Figure (cartoon, rainbow, N blue to C red):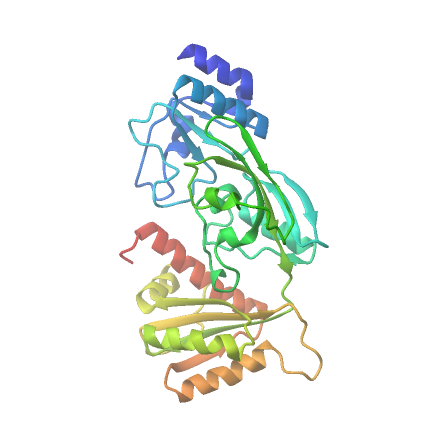
Length: 348
């Protein structure tokens, strides 16, 4: 109603409200353009206190809330129903990096921070934040945590919930739950933060997070493998853990149809390996310890491992990137395959 709209305006100001069907379209349409919902207004609070006040008002008035971060998902979780007449609450204005603690390997951020910004911020402090997704240039950390995102480095670092030390959350009644702890050894009762990661905003709206950081990678080896079949990929990964001294960072299986489509339609990518197979594997090993002069590094260990896998018949051919440009080319193919899969859905 007009009265409630004015109460919302009093909380977040004019810049915190998005009105009008055309202006609201980016917030009520999912990334794949497959779902279009409805909303009476999009509310964009700028502080946790504003989030709290908005949620309290909606709770008192019985108004439904659809929480939203970067709106890059494909499952419709951030997209309101067409019949929705409540609000979309976007955390996009909560986009500050509040603290970086390189000594304690942590970073405190607001939930609207873009994932790639957090990766770059960690890198400037010679630290590494491992969550990496195809949509990292536009997805926001609040949505990553609320959906318990995986990403390409999940094999080594786990899902998003494994990258978090503490959270701040606005609960459904508007109360602010402050769990912003950076203590790694914390055995003080229930670990409530895990209730909110993977809950997709149904139990509360994440407004801040304390994220874990790792040492920056100093020795990286990236390879593109032509492999026999998916079973071979499983066996290769299993043996790679010990061969790399538990330094497997990523392992991505791709089918020829997808890679050929990318090579045909995406400018600036080159086929890393011309091989007659239906299956390819992108594998990356990394270590935070620089390669010592005269010592065996990741590339040498990977070369020996791939030779053994060829003898076993699992790997048909392989190439190890000899430069950052070659490695970027391999990853660009993989990211383009992921984007195409996101656009086409599970059928690709």
